[in-house]
Image (cartoon, rainbow over all chains, first blue to last red; front, side, top):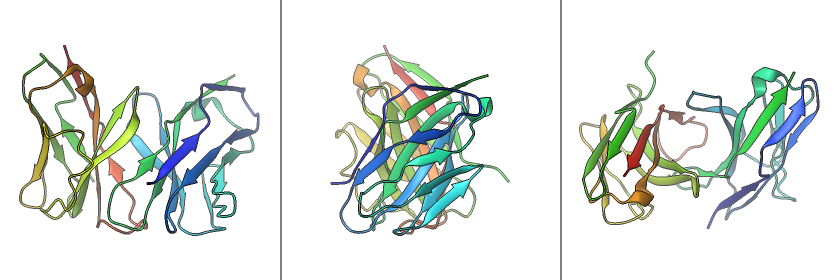
Length: 112
Length: 116
């Protein structure tokens, strides 16, 4: 079956630091890959996505590249802000019409 | 426009009671999904509807769980004879159509269920 593994948190960084949150996946076929974010007290929202190999998703300064050879979709940001503090979920969707498979989430804390 | 709404936002129930959780998807979205978010299991997909039909119920945790969707809109997730391990946040999401990743899933705020 499908599965997603992401680094456990919490991850604590200082403002303006470089961020990487690792995500690897196992899936049959050619899944689409996503990063979702859950800010404190808010619902889950899509941050970025990539639907085929070598695609790069980007939004709000965050980027992730779909690497089929390493089955990875690592999230990066060059300079984080306090407002980026949230829980980040890596997810995949297989070719069928079923739901998303999520990683367990990474709690990111940015200190001023 | 209005997003996905869920009710109640919080529900505390005694072990053994039945509960119903409601989801109102975004107008015009034909596909609706239920997920469960718990400390031990993370975010799990439970079931989805395309229109009124639920093609695959195998993701439901047990036969105490059931879901229906009427009129292609509102959906209800019912848990019978609740157990403490059912305590979790139940999330609903909707999208224009199931099956294609180009259609973003929009999530509701969730219902926090606590079974005492």
